[in-house]
Length: 218
Ligand SMILES: CC(C)(COP(=O)(O)OP(=O)(O)OC[C@H]1O[C@@H](n2cnc3c(N)ncnc32)[C@H](O)[C@@H]1OP(=O)(O)O)[C@@H](O)C(=O)NCCC(=O)NCCS
Image (cartoon, rainbow, N blue to C red; front, side):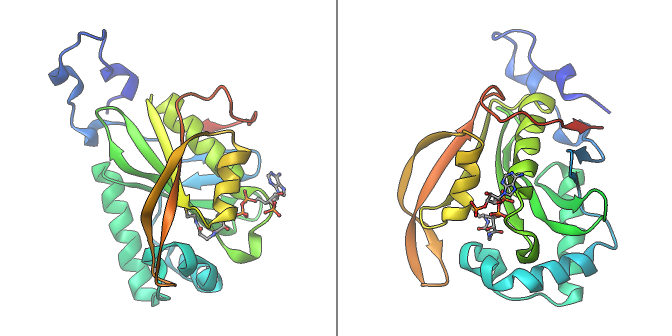
């Protein structure tokens, strides 16, 4: 296995080829730990808790997430999770689940998506089960994921997007002091209208402005 820092270009003049390693060789941690949370990739057996959390939160999720329009069956959740595991191994898409550290309760989903390993660049997504919203868990998990991407994976850019009407999601980005890059007009298809919303685009380029948080990964 290869640590990402081992394969970064040694100088700005380093050849593109030097940087073009196969992403499958990039080592990733088993989990990311914060004061209250464990954030880890999906595993076999997660489908029941994933399915319950999704079903409980469906009305809220379908408002903002185009992929969350129907409550999946248990078998569909299992298929989805196996797909997430395959994408993780291929380093194509890094979906992660969030658990409360003490109780091990399944809280929600997050991850590093729309990956470009050559930059490297990622987009963070998130959802929280409705019964556990309003406790700052997503602000905490997103702070941790930003630190992991920027420091652990040496990301040049990590962005987060949401509908301009998704006040709760945009509040997370504001609480973390992300840089507001602009509004993409008529860019977000919301199937619940159906309607077209604007997209708010935020990004982070280093960890300097993030609120302090003890995070470890390994
Ligand atoms: C977007 C979403 C994840 C936000 O969840 P959330 O629970 O509001 O976010 P957080 O976990 O960061 O909690 C923040 C809230 O907890 C409160 N809070 C309590 N303790 C806190 C702490 N230690 N730290 C930060 N906030 C805390 C905050 O004041 C805030 O409350 P407010 O909304 O009344 O101001 C959730 O609404 C959701 O899942 N929506 C559907 C899916 C979705 O829209 N995803 C994003 C697509 S772009």
